[in-house]
Length: 293
Image (cartoon, rainbow, N blue to C red; front, side, top):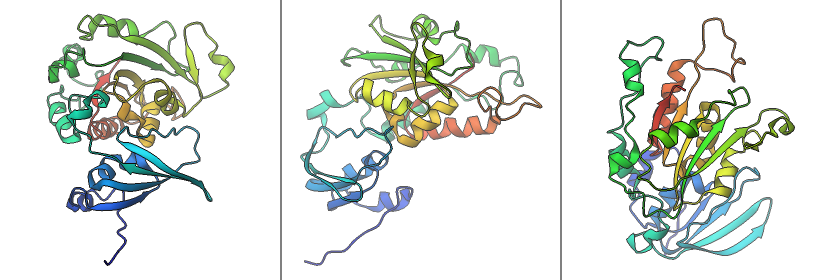
């Protein structure tokens, strides 16, 4: 039997769509999380996925539950080989994190989110203030009772220059459709300077770039996760694909005032950059809302 090697870019989505399901018996990838959906779809049951592990300590490898590690070896980097035991179906839905099982189904639900503001509130019409009070929450869009999740979590991520008296947790508990179910709440301060500056009562701290690691160490695929976070933190989670652990996100994206430098207020950005980030999040299947504080 003739064997041949296909090299497929993680960003070549048209080529990926053209590959039939369960076409491959062996896959080699240097970033499983970034390509997990494509690998799982195209790898046959019983096939092997060999993964080159990153040296970045912020990335924690989470083995899918329908895979079994069969080989680990150190070369120039660590290599893990996993065998695919079965397909992710309703039979193992207890380990599936959402009622919406595919990215296309998630995106279909997200089309019913409130429209994004094309200008920030201070520049938009007077109707924007009424808009701010009308987010279309994910459980309402999907009809999810939230009862099937073993754990429900809200994470309020703040940066060092935020007002420490302000809290998204109070807003969340007052406004979010919790269905009268318990949500564990966390306030996490991401640090860009010395960690000792974060030793405040009731506030956990994580090193800069460490929110992805915190998520992977503290929440699981099958849990329901809501988060409020600033754009700088969200971009890091997008890069590592840890954002896929978040079901619903309230995105705070600070925009520049006239004459403001890039370093002021955490590197505020042009509003079009905020809109581009919003689009990238919906492409990942995250229910995202604009947060204005």
